[in-house]
Length: 214
Ligand SMILES: C[S@@+](CC[C@H](N)C(=O)[O-])C[C@H]1O[C@@H](n2cnc3c(N)ncnc32)[C@H](O)[C@@H]1O
Image (tube, rainbow, N blue to C red; front, top):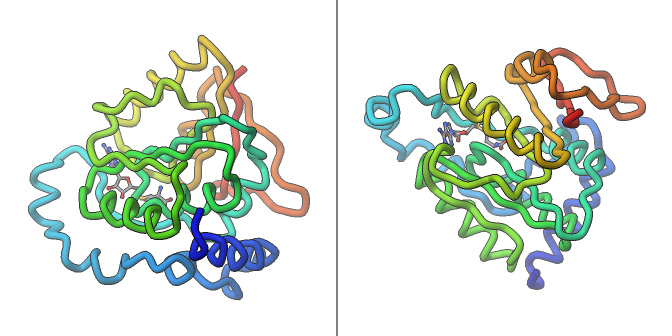
């Protein structure tokens, strides 16, 4: 992590104490992610045609959700965290600023977003962040210990990813964090056990949910 990374880390820790998203500076401003410049330049119509079955809308997990995610996961040295459908990589960047000993990997279908995520990781000197551009089906995430999904996949893509996660869980314990509509799908899987919510925090249907393999 370079000097800019340490400054971002200090700002992040100050914000980590704030649980109210309205009071919290958003993570794009915090790290200099150019989402609002890049997103309008993406030719969404063409992308929708090319990636027909995929859900390519972008929304970043709100910063208080990311902060809660890493408070709850308490990643260990050497743990490998994957954000499947990582967008601009804000979750990975926050994770790497908070924990220098774990590794943070992501896959993102749209090259423009993945490229920006890699630029920010380089800018902050985060050697433990790796962002791959491509389809989740083409990426080997078999070495992961924790996985985050914020509504990246639909239908058969989601079903295939879940099957692959289940196969990993047959070999060793994994944790899965989900946020949004995917919660409902995860909650129905009999090989996952829900973990209790954070003290003082509610757990609504669409809120951050943590699961561990049985
Ligand atoms: C709702 S965004 C979440 C971004 C990020 N996880 C976060 O919380 O800030 C979901 C992302 O998944 C990506 N995505 C959708 N289908 C994908 C696929 N098949 N392979 C890789 N990424 C995909 C989309 O392009 C989008 O950027």
